[in-house]
View 1 (cartoon, protein in one colour):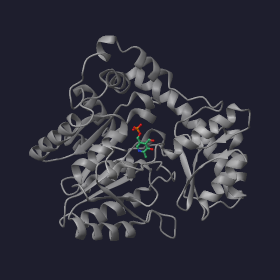
View 2 (cartoon, protein in one colour):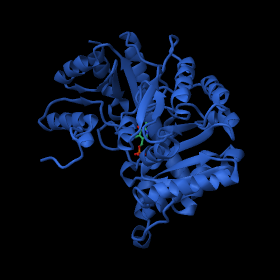
View 3 (cartoon, protein in one colour):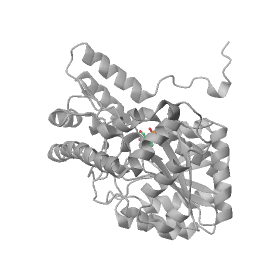
Length: 402
Ligand SMILES: Cc1ncc(COP(=O)(O)O)c(C=O)c1O
């Protein structure tokens, strides 16, 4: 007899992306020539995980006395301050209202947001293309997930669809939590323009008096944004302060190429001191009730990377090299994909891009037969350029186009 509760029976045993990656690696190990565009980590052109040497050094230099003890439940204060300083470099008002809790990666921050800004049974609202674990996180917390059409006919973020979905949600559940993953959205690669942020903010503020609305910006890929100032969008969010809840999922996974270190944070902007203390308590309670506390050594290393001027500089320089590597793949993709007439969103940079197609699952199967692995979703194929060498991009695009 299966003793797992009925609602948890029949859950898939393996994340579909990890399963595809496993298959690609097995075929490669048998000597086949494989293009594996499924891996969500940045690989160098030899297929090895790209690791910032400065970050590796910072982790290595953390003494045993820092790895062994428990950390405070909410995270070490200097880590939390460093993350808020990093996010809100040019936003003193946001910085002054910030309250943060350490989480195991950005995933933990998303988990805490779902648990604290939605009642059980209520729905999270996000874009129609979204990172699969958003659904898993909702399932796991007995919440649901609703979407709005991500793109309008002009290929821009469909803020009218967001507005309609928000209105329906407020009517149905009297509160709303919205996840927007930007810049370098996973899976589409889309980065919103300032005017799109302004339009989103306008819509949220328009509904703010009707119900508590919270916007969480998932900044997992912020360090890889193609635009010169990846934090410039924050100034567009200023009108939300005090009207609409504002939170951020911050992650060291991509920023410092240490995915397995599991360092992240949820950061909320709460201008009212009493409400800020209440938010702080709710986050800490959630931490105690899930993972208890995060890796103290991991937080120490990341704090050093954020606050030691020499280390921060060298990791920025090293990351710029990775951005150049990724940028060359993006440029090669744009040239080849345009020539082949592939349909995909505006793609300036980031780990992934999504190619629209009606027969995603069949197409992905046909591509797999040719040794090219991508991840099928509804109406689209997710292509992880972060794991494909520039020289393999033409073969990848040919397979996508055939
Ligand atoms: C969109 C998005 N959000 C959040 C994360 C969180 O990653 P982590 O928990 O490693 O910080 C990822 C990782 O792939 C992601 O793609």
